[in-house]
Image (tube, rainbow, N blue to C red; front, top):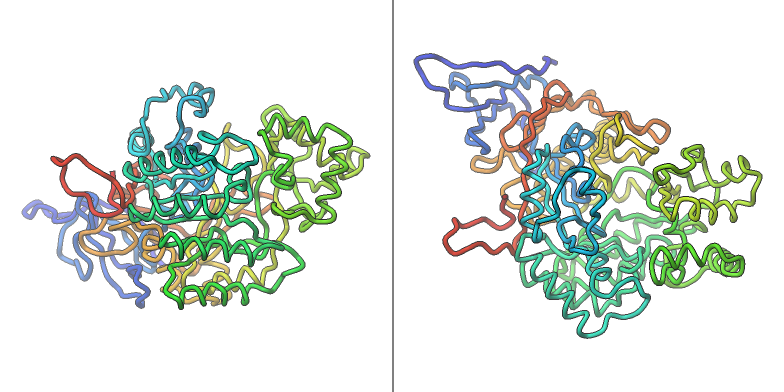
Length: 562
């Protein structure tokens, strides 16, 4: 296969027709149709021609001979709101072929307000907190220079913190109305919908009725309801039924984040879960899901605590777990089971929980060790180590949980209504931001799907998986004019070697970039060439379907771009 090259081309007598031509590749246009040998012509930030473009001059050329040329991948569950502010290169994402991501599962800087914004973080970066909402944040983010396009959801969890606080209680009528008003504002400014992370307080304190009320507001603007549902283990069926109920009662498309069976007692039950969703879809409900290709989850260590421990926020939580009597109660709840929260520790066991990161200045010797290994290292009981680590690090401990079975991962990846979401932040492989031992999904999700599950295992045909990573993801989230190689649409595209594309990131060495991704073009700008960053940053803010513009402004297509 020919090496990818960029060359200036053209004829002095004839002005170049294209700014960029991607020549000689096997084009998968994102619709699921088979590959065809074709060239792609780009002018400015748009695709203008697809076909045999030989003899038609271009300012620059990408030689894609022997490579697959496809639309840029859309990460439907990104977590890069903060990291892209700090480092717009977004290396771990764009080097996978990600050209757009949707952020805002549980929080987003786009909805920060005075009193809740992370001012020390912004001060360290020299950023003034002066954006007034979604559009303002996306403008600021893109203005700093980013390699990927970014859109955001409006998180229920964040609305609750700002309006209701951290108490374990129902929202009062006036509080619910205030959350609804703020959501309405966010939707008009460009949010793609309402999100929720219902295993995390205070989102977990919200009732179904509260969510339905807010989801109706998102639906009125053409938005989605996107949820980390209330349970993925013992309570998976009930939690999924709640999401389906919200889809029906709010008349809104629902996306279930990282669909999984996260408890050993229910391993290999994914076919029944898929059937549950299929029945809802057969009734005309728009219910779909995202997935990442790993049997290990990643979240915070304090997510293993029962909901009642978090009542009142982190300070109250830390005070409770320092008390011996309260520790004994928590231990009983985790051991016996307790309604109302996701019991990660019981599902994974001390052997199945690995410390991924601790707060700055913490005990880094525990990173990469299971709770059992840390207990042996310290000569302590694993229960005490669990509580002590949280206290030592002010609750800021990231962990990996071995919760899923590979068969269930494969079953999810087979489904045509499942997009790919990395559930990760874009970050570098080295430097001051490269701390801890993160989940490898941040560096390897999309190449792992294409290499392991598509090429090696032939679980899904390549054109179909490309569809789900591109046009399917765009339709799922409501992003217009991206996700297909189509004249008139934005020129986000990738060129990769189907024979060598693979992830290199492992749980032991997660900060490794993938192989086989030869080029990435974002808004017509070559951002990755020969598998390396070019230094160009052409990413933009993506605006959702409810965006309102001044009457004098030019019309913006649904899901348009800033």
